[in-house]
Length: 132
Image 1 (cartoon, one colour):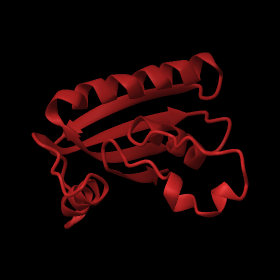
Image 2 (cartoon, helix red, strand yellow):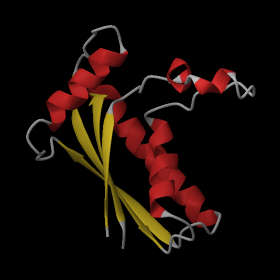
Image 3 (cartoon, one colour):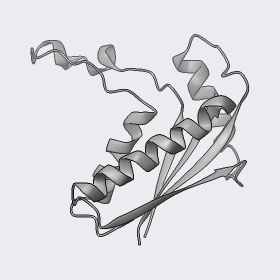
Image 4 (cartoon, rainbow, N blue to C red):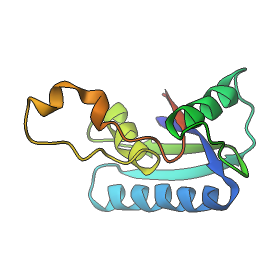
């Protein structure tokens, strides 16, 4: 069963809520026959590769005018999905919208040439790994 692993720098108060959002999404995917089964596991204070937490904290500072994410830690969300009808990678990117909102892009192709102008900062910096 494939596992989508998100390591997320998140405030303590929001960590459980994000887990509930992932669980609700899994339930909706099952109901829509996009997956046959799935579950979410939350791991507080996971063992991380060296530098991961520092990189996530720096990413937040870079995107939020050098501010730190107060009262935060890295939380791991393991999302097990079975019977995926499409791409697991595409599913992971769709789920990442819970941490990085989708940008409101203009319809004009000329305005889209400079993509970085339209980037939206992550609410919570994250990394992803897909394990099969």
